Length: 192
Ligand code: GRF
Image (cartoon, rainbow, N blue to C red):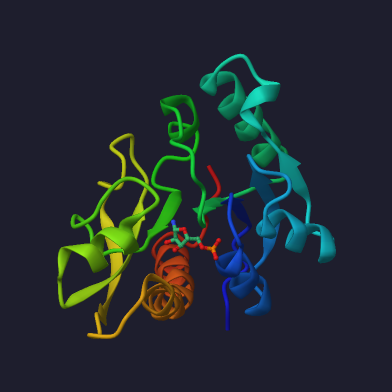
């Protein structure tokens, strides 16, 4: 059984992790994006999920954007924030509002290939034989918060970025829900 913790998903990309959570019946009560035309936003619209658009150009500063997003998520009673392909760094005013209650999924075995949106490309170019993905708590140090779960993925000799990324994604779709369960069980009430 999946926990009914109220999830707020932040996304900027294709949205496969968002789709996976919804298909597994997670309680996604809000989807926030900085890219209203991204795949994740389109999926949210199709499925009638509450969608908030927080494009940087609507705000004078990163802090102003993150405060608006924080308030919007709070209004929807979000208990756990899930960064699923969100491509902006969160300001301290946002992370402080959800202490220990923001998770991120990153497509490498952190601390290897931290930072940036090209971790899969860098892993392939580096010649490592194993890479993978990590779910970790978000702190103010980018990609450096406490690790919750990792999954290893072998790099095959004929891998391309696309084939490797697809296998990493499959593991993300397994460990992100698992990490949510771990957090939900550790603190049955994630409410602030
Ligand atoms: C994932 O690979 C995740 O690790 C990274 O961004 C990607 C998002 O994929 N942070 P999707 O938009 O959920 O398909």
